[in-house]
Length: 111
Image 1 (tube, rainbow, N blue to C red):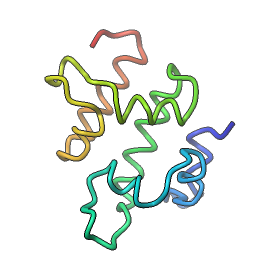
Image 2: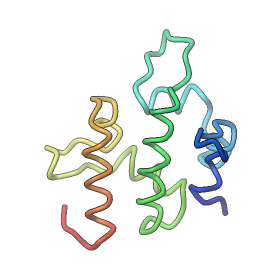
Image 3: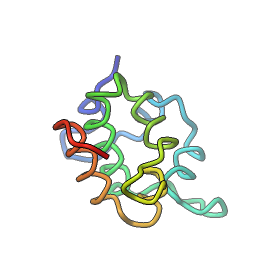
Image 4: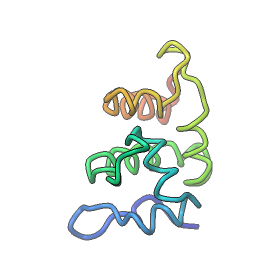
């Protein structure tokens, strides 16, 4: 099983191909999850990918795997954020809030 740290190259950039393989997603699916417009030929930026990997690394500690962490990211509504998912918040530019929330939950905090 691939761990989140296996997705980051020595220079700190995210290996997109390894991330897509670990999550069993297409580049288009990942771009949509992160809010890259469908009409855009762009892939998610390294900042967006780094935020995602950081969130998944934290969440996978209790979710059990990277794919399960991504499922949480994509589908689990967060009561303290008005029922939005982590993906919704990241698409709104609120990745730091998701990282804080995930860190709090990893320490045994409440939603």
